[in-house]
Figure 1 (cartoon, rainbow, N blue to C red):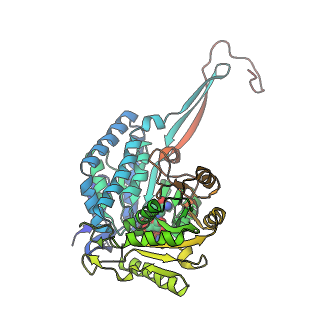
Figure 2 (cartoon, rainbow, N blue to C red):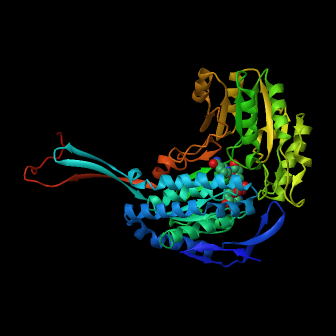
Figure 3 (spheres, protein in one colour):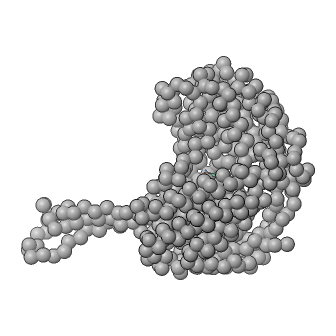
Length: 495
Ligand code: NAD
């Protein structure tokens, strides 16, 4: 059976491969390949390769860096179906959804080709007589990127194009559940002319992550994953003196006001709740319905759910399987809990009819009404195709509910009342807000990130914040002697 290895210094390397993980096709439940888990020696090889090439890459001209990223963009765009097929095989999401993921990543690559404008410093002439002050932005060194299973191509692409554009070198540690997309990307970067060692892939688990977090050659960490691991990564990385941005979990609410178009809301709730089987950090998990519309809305959502086809993402269907059997069972256990806690399971995905292999990790779309906010089903991130409905009496009650939540990644309001929408964007304590847009993922030239337990650190991904995270600023005060200077003056210059 094929073993997915590491990509170090421009080459595929098997690594020590003392520990292996199984990689499944979630639609068949079968192990399709294995992945090599890095030992410390493998991690050091990747980090050392990135560190050795850093001075040369830092000094590579902006023009040359732009050309390489542009060439990568062209290759990725021409061959994106190949990458989508790899994602679908190991993750399970539909091919259309996988292609959408690649396209969103591609947008960040396109943004990174504008590196020259984003790396400009500033210049002030004559701040004092004959003295000029200016600033320059320089890269940090080796950057560690640790990514989750749910976007094996897009999440790495939120970070590495900008990190590389800014003159850093990268060690990417993808999820061990779908490790092949990262290798495909690394090979295409080499084809695009990226020098060996600038982008490396290290497969593995906690051991590889811990090495990235503590090795002094690694200067910055970009992490995306669940909240407990994000908190750990932030604490460990910052304690080791690194710059860290750690994006965590989510539980996103959609507030629906009585004046909203309920057909548009029902379509949006379906798309945002069940796309990618709910395994999206920007999925809508809770519909907060301001009465008296809840019954009407639930009926419209249920009608649409009846038409959803669950199946193998390589075939025509709306929704694929969950990532592992364990995760499928965990999500199903939340539906059991909902019943115990007094909620009403309106549509039950535990016994779904499937277009595909019966051994796949299937769970159908599920709708639960009257979810008590004290229940774990409301409070925990479930990360599956489970949409909860909570009924409230007013706009203010809805806003209070959302603001009381632990997570603050994304949220949306559905209304035709501009004043209510404006008040919502002002009062809500969430990082990314949609107004009649259910999944408000910012475009690449804005920045992606949430509040509270959804982001540890103060800098979001891509956009200007991305360039800010991957650079440090030097400020230079300069004077060139001319005959008008001279003489002794121990005080500050006055003019
Ligand atoms: P995860 O936290 O299990 O894993 C994320 C990464 O951390 C993986 O590379 C994994 O190998 C590594 N890891 C796992 N356990 C570790 C440990 N004990 N110590 C060190 N590293 C460890 O997350 P996941 O299940 O792969 O992904 C789903 C999670 O990611 C969800 O919580 C989702 O909300 C979150 N996510 C968040 C965003 C965002 O932008 N905020 C985006 C995508 C996914």
